[in-house]
Length: 262
Ligand SMILES: [Zn+2]
Image (cartoon, rainbow, N blue to C red):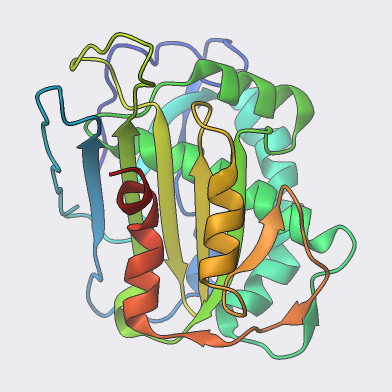
């Protein structure tokens, strides 16, 4: 299935260049690593508008109809697609493959955690463009392109999961959060993004939040300690896998940001 983007994306979301190409949200090489896709396990998109003094619209759930790894977006130019995005794939691929397969006794020390976190942010930035109402923060895309690392607005955790529902799943939640001293326009696009991606035995949880301070980081790391492994911005050297998540915990993690803010 091809996803039509809103007007914004006539230029590359990363470098502003032209000559857009189609990019798979979930790279094709992962097909050899992921569980059998005998049936589609689901992907939801929800937009939750916060600050209840305004008209609250949502959440909108959208069950995607295409198979998990067939979604593409046309928002990136050829040189970004074949250049830095490809480099991120190559760096994360060996470790990511092992984590998706549920291999035991990996080390996430050194550059391993940042490599997986960078992949998670790249994939989250692509995944959210498949939604009906993408979160718009062009500066995050540009800074990510410039530094090739998650920006200071990004937080990434990983967890081990053993649940059919989470084997092939993407949960994108956009939130529009307006600070008390700022005026709110209910038609503004979401400004906080939470993306939870289930890949076989691996769950990656990414929050991109240019609005609030990252107290979220400490809250989530503490609330799911022993299960959520912090990968970015403050990776804690650890061995993999951690305690395996209960499926209900995976859902709680995917819904944690709207829960925290409401
Ligand atoms: Zn580009």
